[in-house]
Structures are given as C-alpha cells and as structure tokens.
Image (cartoon, rainbow, N blue to C red; front, side, top):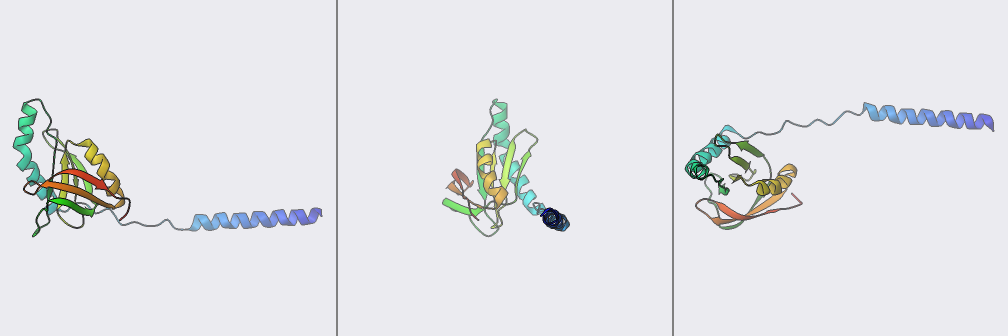
Length: 156
C-alpha cells in the first residue's frame, strides 16, 4: 500500500509540474499599437479650438469657465438634429493654452464630438470609448453641433 501511495504522489507531482510548464511556455498575445488621431483630425480639432477662443477668453475675463460641446460631421456630411450614433473610439483629452479642458472622440464613422470643461460628459463617454461601444448624443443645434444628452451603450 505504501508503494502505491508513493507512486500516485510522484505521478501527481509530474502531471502538475507539466501543466505548470506548459502554461508558462504559452506566448503572450500580441496587440497592434493604438491608433492615434491623424494630423487632419488634430488640425480640425485645433480649428474648433480657434473658433471657440473668443467665447472661452470672454468667459475667463469674467472669472467664469465656459462649458460647451459640439459636433463636427465627417467630410461631405451634415450634422443632423436629434439622436446621432457612433462607436466610441479614438478618444482623448487635452488642456489648451487658456486652461480649458477638451474631451474629444473621433469615431470610425467620421467627424468628431467634443466637450469643453465638462467633466461629467467626459466621464460618461469614456466608458464607451474604452470598449469601442456605441454611444449616442442628442444634437439641438445643427450649426454648432451642440447637444444636450448623451447615452453610452454596453455593446458594440
């Protein structure tokens, strides 16, 4: 009986060790590097910053912080009133020279959506952005692309 226990114990140790070695030898998955905004996308964002510069500066001069948002349609398309939908990808944040915080999304569907000095907006949409899920925004002004609601979906 004693020899049987020793053999069973030895066999258990060999099998367990083999599984551990096999697990260690499995290669880690490789991922492609993240896609950064193109120069054209950043130029568009910088032009929107310039367009909003006067309003931002006026608010700062009055001791206030402007909270604003907007949408720019993809080339050849128009901003539509009502609910708009896209995938939350290619998101970013930056601080302009006036100390204003910009959160932006470049969805693969084209165009971009942004918010200025609006922490709740950025926090709400970062969830969709991190996962590439659908998000929606309700456009109330087709000239500026301003919106008054957002929605983050739990699926792509």
